[in-house]
Length: 71
Image: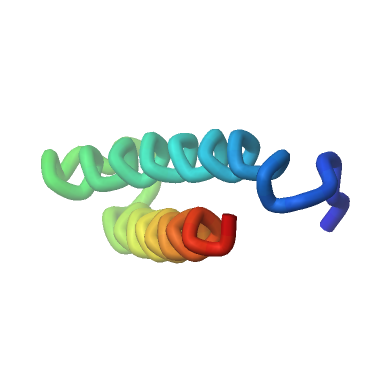
């Protein structure tokens, strides 16, 4: 991946923005799973995407917490 800003201090706003976007996307997927209204695709595919985005957002949260401890 390309590092736009050098140092953990400068990358924290970018990582926080990515984390918030992942949370919003995962909540949107979980909304389709909870309401059982998948639309054109199957509920299993949407559930898989919800799990993936939830896992990614959880790992990003752990990364941000670890970076905050280093700083």
